[in-house]
Image 1 (cartoon, rainbow, N blue to C red):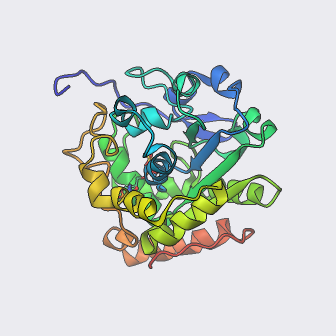
Image 2 (cartoon, rainbow, N blue to C red; image 1 turned 135 degrees about the horizontal axis):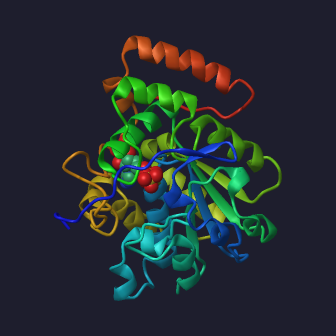
Length: 296
Ligand code: PPS
């Protein structure tokens, strides 16, 4: 893997008003025609909002006790397929989802609400939306883009932050993503929102909320086991959960499981950047009721 020749960094292009890269659109027809099943559970997030954490928790809740050794040895991105992925080292996400042997299927996507395949709405699937405060989200995305050869070159932090505010990121604007999903939540869709900050503050409470939404009733012992296995330090060491098996990610630059904290933005934003960001944030988020915490 060390000597694998890596492809050049891709460029962003516009897909129906959303910045994208070809890796996530090469399989577009199959993505848009994907056939959801009524019991599918879709975990939707803007990148770096806590996708892996919630996918891992749901996988443990559903299959932690019953999965075979073979299933247990699969990395999280094969157990919970990333719908629009087409990384060439693996079958595309649509195919992985079609081939899943576990039921219900847990599927994840970063697509903004308007681009999600229509069968998920037709089948009235349950949706878990994971969201994170934009400042920490931007920092996490910056380090991810530094180490992930499949994404465009991030450049320096100052320019990157401006690009983040302008929505020129893979999967577009974080603000549009969050508000789009938040509005849909209030239109009768079966969905639950999970905030990264709430998960960090009180994972037990959030696990209970998730179980109640999904109609799961694990024993107190089982819940503690899931919570323990899904702790940051434990997941960081677990090659099934920490993405160390993905060759396009250079952990020497930054690990996938980087810090796992709320408030790391304070180590990156200057006072001026923070003020400018807050000013811009107020304008972009003025028409939504969704509230985030940047400290816990
Ligand atoms: S991706 O690439 O979009 O799927 O990334 P995603 O999984 O959404 O986000 C990665 C960030 O989530 C942090 N993470 C966790 N934090 C706390 N506890 C646990 N268990 C956990 N698992 C993942 C991960 O460290 C990334 O955040 P940063 O701030 O970069 O550390």
